[in-house]
Image 1 (cartoon, rainbow, N blue to C red):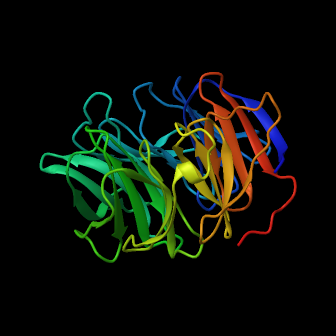
Image 2: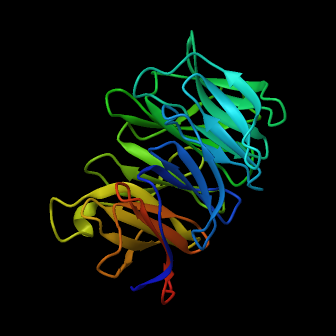
Length: 313
């Protein structure tokens, strides 16, 4: 299946690249501290320079008016136009090579923080940064990603730990102190939540299947082992994947192969065919049928859509 190139841009070397929930835009964080909001033509529409040690998972409000930055010792709301600080929520500093994360929902701003008693996910008031609720998490995290649920009340949390294990949690604004861990095990990463809110997508750490699991209990709906898809037995699923449409998942392999799968059975539909010079190291998928590929070192970013829309199922 051929990919149609929509736009191409060159940015500073990348630390991270993300979709912005609720907005037709993308967020790029450069290793130089640049935080850049790109529209669908990959034109810069907001830009801010952060201190170089702010390597956390940052976010942007859907109206693109404010950045939520996860700093080493606090969570900060920044005015995207003026570049000024609106409020700050302090916490115990992360250790070297550790970082927090943040996400914006209708319920408020969710953020991973550290306290003297341990790591906690907090729900902050968007107006003043006050904590409205919090959820304890163990063991201590090294990094994390918060994925807003379509209902605006829940978030999914992918938490990484010092032993390279990942754990998945579901948190709800209506149930403080209750962080529900989703099985199975410590070898999967939560990568996306379906627009219906009823399905979550997970990718494996090292070898393992791509999987669709039920929200909120994590029961497996479908799992597709890499050996059923990739011709090389050493090729496995990478951590990059997402719902491209309600009926399609786009997932990456360790060999930088990008494959479409049907929902809900994860049947392989087609492999994406790119131009020879297309970057494929990173893959960021959005549910409106568009996605980004990128090369982290060169900062090359490309936006794509399917040239021909396949019928899945």
